[in-house]
Image (tube, rainbow, N blue to C red; front, side):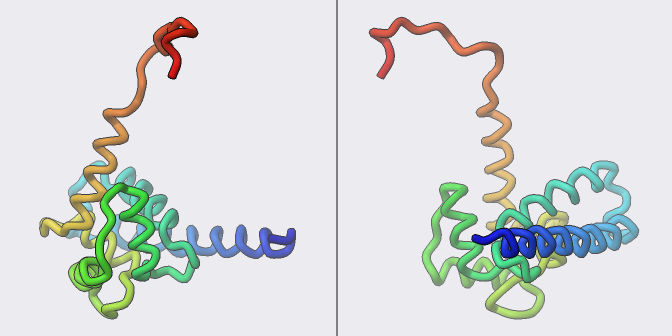
Amino acid sequence: MDLQGGKAFGLRKAQQEEWLDGINKQFLSDPKYSSDEDLPCKLEAFKKKYMEFDLNGNGDIDIMSLKRMLEKLGAPKTHLELKKLIREVSSGSEETFSYCDFLRMMLGKRSAILRMILMYEEKNKEQQKPTGPPARKAISELP
């Protein structure tokens, strides 16, 4: 990628982040969700997760982005399963879901499969954090 392309990508990501922040503000002022004291932290985490998988930066997660997301999380799905997940989350198209759809799923009471996968991934990350210095090993013990 040339310098100009990298600059455009950075600008596009900054614009995307600004746009997602605007949506987060709408959710913060929504009485349906405002009783949650952790909402600002949750929204920030959800925004980062969404941006990580909105690879083309167009604001929607398509089937290929969802496929990559679930593969990275260790939960690969078939094409039909991916279409079903998108249909479960999306309020509009059967091809993509928006950030608003994503937030409604993550903050909602309904138990969406995608939500459970993402929550499991977060719990798994918390458990994997090493504490303290690594144990000493003799050279003969190394793989």
